[in-house]
Image 1: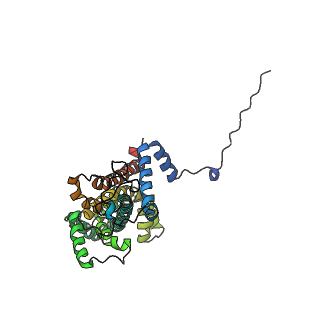
Image 2: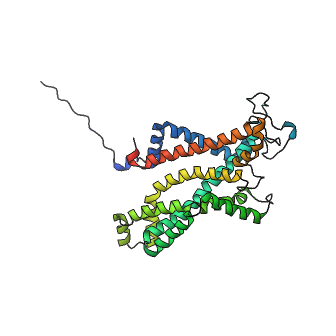
Image 3: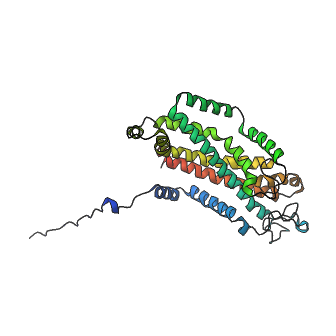
Length: 319
């Protein structure tokens, strides 16, 4: 007699019990495959944690001066003092403390200015692409006028006027109040890129079936723009924003180097570079090298993350 084999029944889970693969799950798997973006994310996360907890992690007050320990080299160099791991500057201020507090300025300005620019640019771009006609012409001509002025020169001009008007009394202001002119200047001067990209994406989406269905259901134009079109155009805008955070941090450092970014009482990486100019010829290398490395590492990390986001959101670039 032949043996009768019975197949093991396959149990199919109902759709409600299946684990839904979310965008975050796919992003995490993509990060694990791409090693460099994961390292960059860890580095950027560490910088953000240090910046947020600056009063806790900083060993000294960043503006506290002690001339008895001025120009100490880093602890790992000859003549260094372990109490000052990254040395001191010409006024005896701890370089590590100023570096940590300077990270707060760079990150706040970088992310907030991009948020301001993105909000203005995306709103105007979606409106221009959706309505077209004269509305599109007016907004795009405003963008052309904005592009006629180099953004860094426009920022220098505006900040020079604002700094002359507000004076030098900043002791009673919060950090955000001191940074607000710089944030608004960089934000308003960089909205054009977001506007043009949002307009081009809106032009490609406004005739799609889901938009026509929303119109047929009686949705208002405002609802269609910001509930149907905008969510479907966020991917390229997020990638653009990630790259612009890096460029905004560089712009903030450049303006602070010129003395136009923030008040002198606020420690910044660009300000630290400016203060080290006269020290370079005397062999005090750490005052320029350390903040320069901080800017380089932060910008490279953000750019690597931006490259990864571009690959993640573009199916043609995925491995």
